[in-house]
Length: 302
Image 1: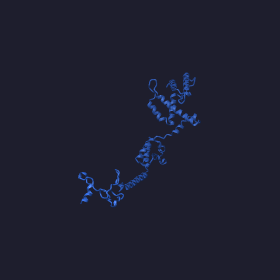
Image 2: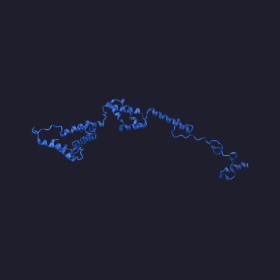
Image 3: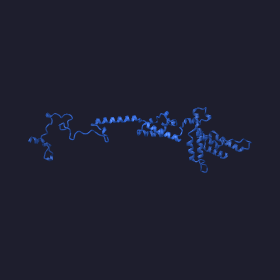
Image 4: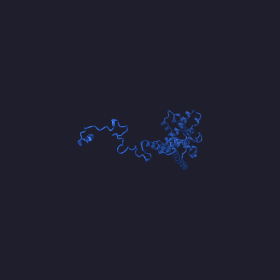
């Protein structure tokens, strides 16, 4: 009994009367051998109280992806991910926005084929396509929605024609510049466009009484609606010529006209036609141009 008592005496807590002394506990392994690797403390080889810890399970992981251990869980998650990718591939969800603009133009209605051929450069379409990709919208579905919108616009008569800037500029090459080099033709076109813009803006400018001949809102609308096409610019040129009397037949001397008035008109027209009176000229004087223009209008009764 004493031997048994002394064996367990060191295990008593100090407040139980034990002094922590006594003989050390017996070696759990005969002959002082080390416990086998992986054995739990105490050398018994038994599992810890409560059993082995459960495999790690991320919050929200469904039962179908949870395995009996971490390895099986990862395998199930990888299988599910592959399935999602295959589903997206079958639905043709793209990994880049440009895929949405790859329409089969030849199969589209003729009314808006030209629109679809240039739709990739449309910022509004690109913004919508970006959201479609983020939301996993298939290419075919998004393109069906797009063509439906264009078809409805065409049926309602509100689908505007596609404007080809290069073709419009080519139509504005003056006859006097037809045989010039490309750079000189571009300068002539730019000068023609500038003259039309200046014509509208001059009428929008307030006069001596603080009022403009043309409401600025009307002028801005005219520039917006007419300046981007050759036909629109030709209309502005016609109106400018009508207002300045360029197309009017001038009375000849001796036919009852007023030679003095005609001479003054011709003098002013010559001054307005001078190179330095053209907006594109490096020595263009806008104040002088406007003064001559006002005087010319007074002479012709405008």
